[in-house]
Length: 93
Image 1 (spheres, one colour):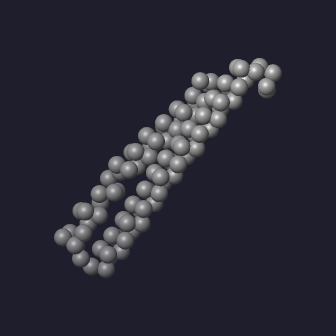
Image 2: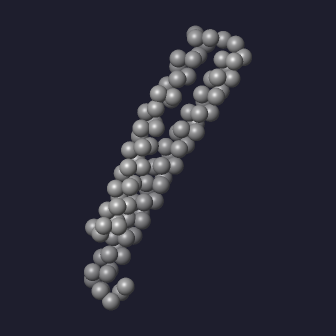
Image 3: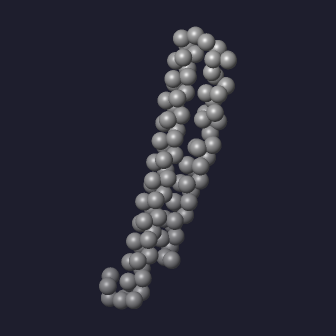
């Protein structure tokens, strides 16, 4: 595997690690501690809505990171294929 392909795979791995950390963020469990047993009023309802919005944004960001990792893996595969062709046919490039 060439240095470029390895770099792409390493970066994909890093993105997946960040996505996993986001998916374990304490914010995702906050709604359980802020429900009607904790408080009830219009501000509480707004707070819960805000939590849900932030949770959705956090999960969307994690999904985006995983998608970008997939793209990087595909780029690494393409690079490896190009490297293999270059080795097999040095005049190709």
